[in-house]
Length: 331
Length: 81
Image (cartoon, rainbow over all chains, first blue to last red; front, side, top):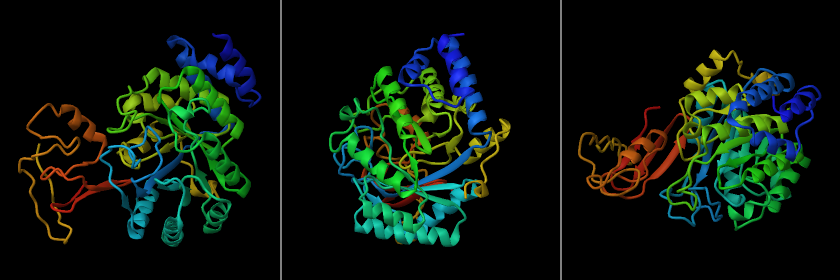
């Protein structure tokens, strides 16, 4: 057994202390034949420190496309020749999306907008939308609206938004290669305000943006320092017309290494499968990740792309005897 | 490849399924030219982006359990919800 896994067993599994950057890097460098061992240990860590339940979430785009930022992976930037057009979702459709999500047994519904940060029009849509959802649907509402002012943070808390997503996307050192219209530090500032407000912090990123394995380890360590309630883990799904549109997808084995490594860095966090798993891991890999540290999923479609049918994921969880977290457990 | 516009914005149904699509609804190039096998494969996990009848970029909304794609000229296509 590689030394790093013995260290992780004593430190992470037994004491609940996550691996540091060097430890994460060692896991990311494990040879193929030891990836199953890393996944097994990550699964034990998840079961020990999080339990068997899986948190299920649905997401929807409230405002699609036309974003002024230049995140190089994103088809919603108005700066690229992506085929994605700008469009707003109306309130009845937003409530319908929340109902579709709740019908899967999900406890989380995240409202997302492609913006630098919310303007008054978006905040008004959020006020009306969150109120309409809370009146008709039994589900927790989260939001992802870009960078916030303190006043906007306070207003989201007042609306009853319980969790805020703002991804750092990649490591601090690699971020300028991915985004040039704002800084990693600006994102960190929003996350600090969200944390201080009492909202739960949801912060993850995308693997496969061209970062090195060292930068992947750096990213895991920076997330661990932030200590978010939830870490959504995306794998690049190269989008036509974006600067990263021709990048290769992450190899399945590398994706599984990363899942194990991120779990061993953050033993207590909600580690969520987000976008890209369908093309990176497929059905078998999805199962391996759920048995390797993942304890949350986004079900159904994503913001501009489609996912597996929610029923396929729910059947898989049933097969794995992993109960879906109930709403009562989140309140 | 076939066009599947089924509902106009005015609310009337106008089924054109079975008509030959002029344009690939993923890449927006001529459907009859080039190989669109990769587009067809990608469309398993993507909604359409271009109107197959006129090549206009459509307004696409993706919901957790379905999607709709609207062309100002040829109406709205919806997935099965």
